[in-house]
Image 1 (cartoon, rainbow, N blue to C red):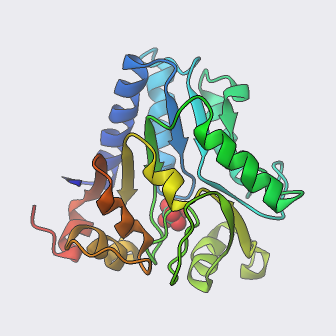
Image 2 (image 1 turned 120 degrees about the horizontal axis):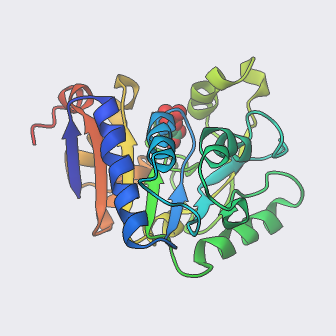
Image 3 (image 1 turned 30 degrees about the vertical axis):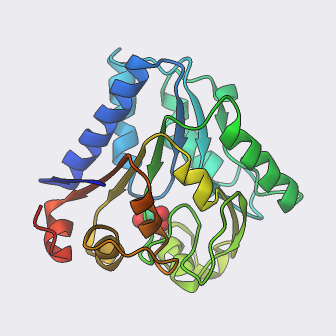
Length: 245
Ligand code: PGA
C-alpha cells in the first residue's frame, strides 16, 4: 500500500486530481470509479479547473459511482446523482450518457444487478476513488461480521446516518438504506485511491495504515489485499494516527 502524507488537505486534493488528470491524458477513454461525500468536493473543483483551463479532456471518459441512497429520486438535492452533476459533471466536458449513478428508486434487487453490470461493462475501473467512513466503511459497505462481494442493498449504521445528517435538515431525513458496490467490485479496480482528512477518521485510518490486520469490522482494511492502492492523508491525520512514514 502506498501511504502518501501531504502537508494539507488541499495538497491531498491536488495530488489526487493530478493522478486523475494524468490517467485521463494517457488514456482518454478510461473508466473512473467515483465517490461522493464531503471529502472529494475540493478535489472535484480542481478537476473542473483543469478541464476549464484545457489541461484535461473528459469527453471520452466513462464513470461509475460507488453508491446511492435508496428512496430518494435522482432529482433530490441529496441524491448522489444530483451531487455528481452539481459538483463535477455539469462543469466539465463529460458526456453524461457515459456516467452512471445507480438508481435508488424502484426495485432494489434489479438496481443492484444493474450496478453490478456497470462495474464490469467494458472492463473494470482504471481508477477507483474512495472516501472512508468514521467506522472504516468504504462506499456503503458498513463494518459488520460479514461483508458482500458484489453490488447489494445495505442497511446504514447509526454512525453513518449521524455522520451524513449534516447534509440533511434533520437526522430523520437521512435514508436508512443504500445501494452500494460490494468489496469485490472495489477491489477489482486496477488502482484504488482513498482520500481522508479530519480527526474523525483517526481510528479508521489507523486500522488501515498501521498494521497488516484485515477485519470486516473496518472494511477499508480489505484494501491491504490489493496491489495498487494509494491512501492520501494530510500530516494532521497522519500525526493523529501515529504514522511516521
Ligand atoms: P465524507 O464521507 O467524505 O463525507 O467524510 C466519506 C464516506 O463516508 O465514505
